[in-house]
Image 1 (cartoon, one colour):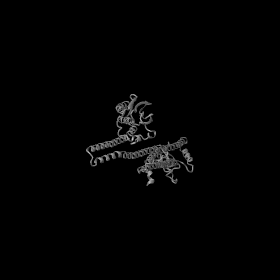
Image 2 (tube, rainbow, N blue to C red; image 1 turned 135 degrees about the vertical axis):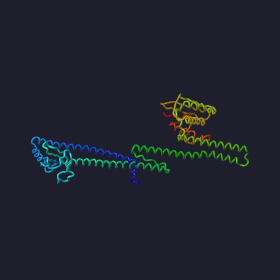
Image 3 (tube, one colour; image 1 turned 60 degrees about the horizontal axis):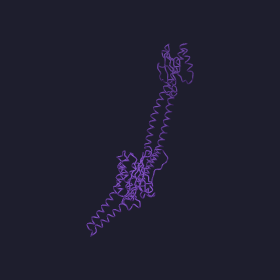
Image 4 (cartoon, one colour; image 1 turned 90 degrees about the vertical axis):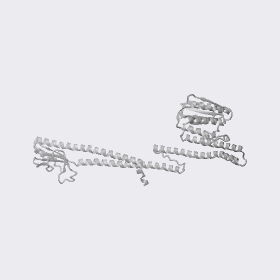
Length: 450
């Protein structure tokens, strides 16, 4: 049954439909050509018959009926005539010709050939009868075999052309459908392998049709993305287990200490407070993860619209200025006026807030944090720069990963999800992020699309 699958493909069905349309149009053309050719041949036959009539009528006009008899005798002298003549008097008596006497008919008609003619059905006579001035009846006809042969030849030619075209069309359809089916089978095999956890399988690009290559490339890109997400999920699961182990272990130890005999009420209260703090830290991690998942899934991009980035950054820097002052740091802004971008205002606020918080949090006293905004070639370019310890060039490719923290930051509060949220929001808004050395410190640039 598998070898006949090509007959049930969409391509083969389309080919069969086109073949049917071709056959229908060919039949219509054949009928039209048959009618036109038949009329042309019939007209040619009638013209030759009328020429003979003109000759015989001229002979009668010049020398009478005897001359007509003589001319008919000359015309019928050939052993295998293709022309037939009959002259009979008013009583129906045959006077001349190679046909037997007949009942007079005065219109074009088909009559049977003389007795003894081979293949009489194929050699029927097509002719016309007329009355001469003396009342005698003259019939002139021609063998219709040539006319029949021409019609059959037309039919045979069209039938052969149509048959060959049908065979070629079906063969091409089967060939194309077989190639498409083979391509689809390879895609199905890869998809089944991926479903069986063989994440490294990809569709081979064969350089075939542009549409097939585009489909294969798109599926491979999708599989690359799924593989990356699965790897990210495995990494996130490992990171969650690692980062939650410490607060949960601390919580258990403190509760066990509070449970011991002899613990005072004050110690119980302190243990509960520390347990609540650990719980808040765990909940903060889950909240950040939930927000990150929603952003990556596009569940928080329904409020996209024009955003005045200048006004947004002005509000954020004014909000964090007191925080910087409390930490004895300096926060300043250099913003181009009325820079507009498309985006979700709430998400963009969170993105810049995380960047500023990260710069303030990891910078020591005296750190300068600068927020700048400019336009270049129609693009809005925002930058958050600081004079803090910065990030080593080898670590810059990891700072936007979930739960990643530099070695010197592991002893400080935090869970390593702030910059992961920045990267997710930037991706949703098609914002390009670049990292540069601020000498000292780090400079994070965000280039918004035109």
